[in-house]
Image 1 (cartoon, rainbow, N blue to C red):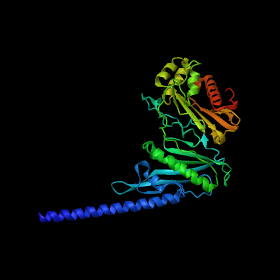
Image 2 (spheres, helix red, strand yellow):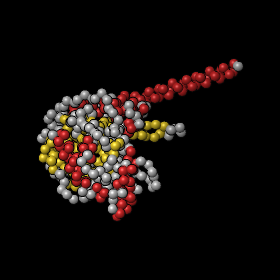
Image 3 (cartoon, helix red, strand yellow):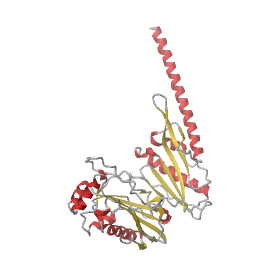
Image 4 (cartoon, rainbow, N blue to C red):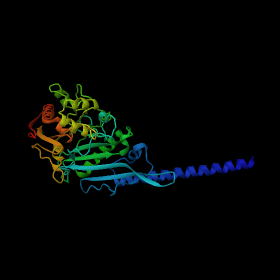
Length: 398
C-alpha cells in the first residue's frame, strides 16, 4: 500500500510538472506570437484579437509563399500569418490564419474582375447527380457595412474604405483595408472581430499614409452573407429590378431563383445572383426548338443556368476589368460593350462614374437570345433610377 502511494505521488508530481511546463511553453509561444503579429502588421491590429480568430491559436508564424509584412513604403501592402499546429506524432503543420491587405485607389486598377465565367457560383455537378445545384451559392455577393459608406464584407473577410479628404502622400485617394480569416466561414462569431480589426487598421494606416478621413462606426449587426437562392417573388433587395422585370415579360427561359443583398445607399458595390432551378430548367427545355434542346441538355449536365450582375460606384467604377485578348482589360468609364461572358455599361451618379456588369456563361446565352439585352437594360435603368444616375450608356446589340 505504501509503495502504491509513493508511486501515485511520483506520478502526480510528474504529471503536474509536465502540465506546468506545457502551460509555460504555451504562454511563451503566445507571447512570441503576439510580438510577431505586432511587428508583421506594423502595429495596425490588436494581436490578442488576431489570436482569437478561428477558435483561437497558440502559435502563429509568417505565412504565404513569399512572407509579407507591412512597411508603409508602397501600396499595395500586406501581412500574412499562419497558425502552427502539431499532430499526434509531433509533426508541425501550417494553416492560413489571418491576412491584412492594404490597397489604394487609383493605384489598384484591377480591384474588381467582372469576368466570373471562369469561377461559377455553384458547385460543379457530378455526372448523373440529382443534387439541387442552384439552391445555394459558394460565392455570395458582398454585404454592405451599414449603408455601405464604411465598406463591405464577405464570408471570410471584412473591407473598410477610408476616403481621403486630400490625396495621401503616396497619391492614394481611397485606402482599402481588408481583414481576412479563412476559418470565418465556419466561425461566424469571427466576423465582428474581423470588422473591428479592419476598421482599426484603416484608421491607423490612414494616419501613416497621411490620409485625412472620418470613418463611420461599425453597424450593430453583421448578418450572414446571402448564400441561399429562393423564389424571385417581391423583392426590395439588390435583385428588386429583376422581380419588377418579371412582371412585364414572358418568363419561360428566365431564371426563377434569386439571391440579393441589402441595398446600401452608399455601397461601392451591389450584386444580384440569378439562376434556374431544376424544375425551371425542365420547363424551359419544353419551350426550346429541338436543336436548341439537345445543346441545352448537354450543357445542363455540366453547369446550371445562371447570370450575375454587379455594379461599382465612384472610384471603384474605374477599377473594373473584363476579359481581353491576352489579359484583362480595364473598363473605361463612360463606355459600354461586351466581351466573352460579360456585358458592361456605365453612367454618372452624383458627378461620379458607375460601371454596370452582367456575367452570363456561354451555355446560357443561346437560351436567352434577345432576352439578354432586355435583361441588361432592365437592370441598368432600374439601378440608374434608384441611385439617381444620369448618362446611361448600354452595350450595342450583338
